[in-house]
Length: 119
Image 1 (tube, rainbow, N blue to C red):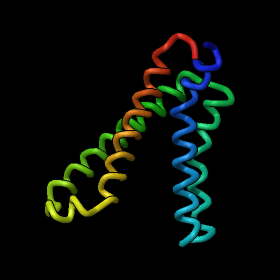
Image 2: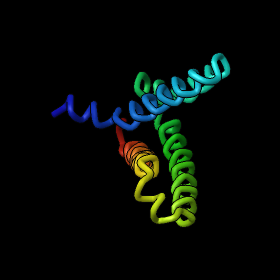
Image 3: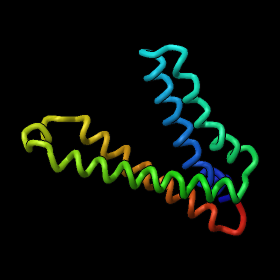
Image 4: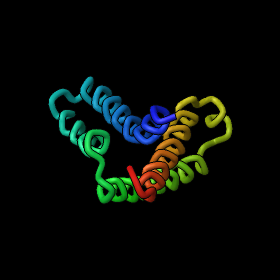
């Protein structure tokens, strides 16, 4: 049971590292060298996996809950203005909804991990 607990504690950090790597590769294809600062976003999450810090964990959780809430509001305002025919034919809308919901869920998971006594 202990290896499963270790994996579940690191899942949100791995998620955000993977999202950062994906974002980097997509921007790197078009922009080139200017995409490398994006990799800096992965450093706090990697640090949490290597050497957990409760304060950093809580601040990452709060920051990404706020950013995810902003993404949800932006997504909902975009969906309201869509034509129903475009909405049903657009696959990007579904994937962006999945991305927004997953970001919020992972940020809440980070906060839940920071509320525990041990990391």
